[in-house]
Amino acid sequence: MSETFDFTVAPFDSLNAAQQALVQATADRRSFEPGDPLLTPEMEPTHAYLIASGQVRREAATLPEATFGPGELLGARAVLAQRASSVSVAQGAVSAWRIPRATLQSLVSANPAFCAALFSDIARRLSRQEARAGQREFLSLIMARVRDAYVRKPFYLDGAVDLVAACAAMAEAGQSNALVRDGGRLGMFTTTDLRDALLVRDAAGRPRLPQQVAVREVAHFELISVAADAELFEALLLMLRHRVHRVLVREGDAVAGILSQLDLMSFVSNHSHLIALQAEQAASLAELKAAALQLDSLVALLHSGGVKIELISRMVRVLNAQVLARAWSFVAPPELAANSCLLVMGSEGRGEQILKTDQDNALLLRDGFECADLPRIAEAFNRALIDFGWPRCPGDIMLTNPMWRAPLTAFRERIRGWIYGSEADGPMHLAIFMDAAAVAGDASLLEQARRYAFEILPGNDAFLARFAAAADQFDEPSVGWWARLTAPRARDEAPFDLKKLGTFPIVHGVRALALAAQLPQLSTVERLHALVERGRIDAALARDLAETLHVVMGLKLKNNLAQRQAGRPVDNLVRMADLSTLERDRLQDALGIIKRFRQVLQQRFKLGAL
Image (cartoon, rainbow, N blue to C red; front, top):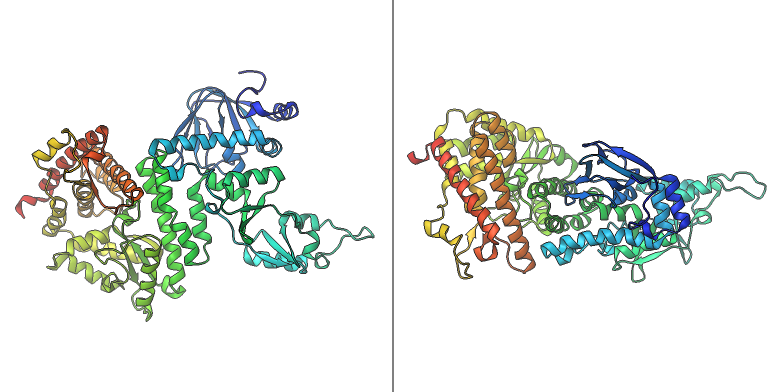
């Protein structure tokens, strides 16, 4: 490793002599062994790394995997945002220069060329991802508009209030800064201003009491503004040029809010964190809608960046649950929320619904609790979800349907009817319920209901066979259809249903095996792992099924995103002409594995005897 820092690589090639001296004085050299972490979400990112030799691998759910080698800068965004969202590990022996946060901030503030080079590199990387997937509307987060970032609503103080009253008002509102109205002027008061105010002295040199200092005396009124339609990059440059941490966001002459440097960097570094933050801090259904409507856009961005389908589904599962729980908190009175359990079911409960295709939800009530206004509350909740982008369930499996909201005892009787009754839809209703996940309220209600189903099932092989038979209800592709996979592609050919012939046989077949084994797991992959541990399925077949499920889910997501971009209805149908040769080959392999699994189910549950 060179004894001196390499100033010939970007963005350090833009530094002047004094700035180079600063880097030379503050950067230090470190060596890392194979497997040593340089950055993790659990570590405070205090230094960026300029790799001198060796390679570092970055892995994250929210960023594409990447390898950093000699001459590449690692961790600059994490350092500036004070939050690492990825794990970066030495692949072999690695030597690197560590640049402290203070040095990086000083260079960014003092050298516009350094700043531009630093962030244009980020933009170029995101642009390459966009070009690969054709998602032009997500060209780059750093080139997004200011209005797309987390612009905090303005909180106002009157300029005449004293510092104690100002701090009390800010504490009550949970604010660390406030806009100050003083006649025709508009200023800003921050915790930094408070610190400086405590040092104010009178003419005699004595400290002034905070009660004697009006907030107008210490607020600053030379505010920097940016238009809501300006690019985020412009807002960042304004902050750096004027050495401020916040800018005023305007819609014409009106104040739309405040954009902080930390919120901007969080947006660039981790868009999923922004959605979670917006959901958590939403003060109304209207504000929550803004977060919910970004979910599908985030999915498109992650997909265009090459993020694995299983990682996308895990992230969406968490974010959806946060949005739904927050929505319930707005419509359900506290007493109802405390005496009930809000459930999501079906693909949403399993964590396998990536785009908002429909909604399956239910409500379990504590025995003895009554809520006269429940029908109106249920309607308000389902209407809010529709407004958030979740279509109404075609099968009416929603809170608005009295069948899917009931006290625990009544719901247990319903479960008994599904298992022992003659209702044709009983097995499918139980299937939907067995995928239920609690998103709000008392989760023990769900556990009691699920435990009851397990208690009354043993020995009922006839029902389990009826239950499993649904996995075999759709005819396998004919011999002629299989030939189409390698035949020339035609636009007039019949489409292939990725759900009926792809995901459903896997999902429901695994669900049937999990029910027979009384497994508590919800996701298909988690159920497969548990089935292998209990010796209920061959490990190699389980691995093939998990991979096949992800292949078909990936094809479905790609097809659905293309349908949305073209303005077509989103469905499960894909035409062979729209698949690449590699995708057709993978689909052919997937269907072969599904066919083998259906044969396993037929033998296990003796479906031929039905």
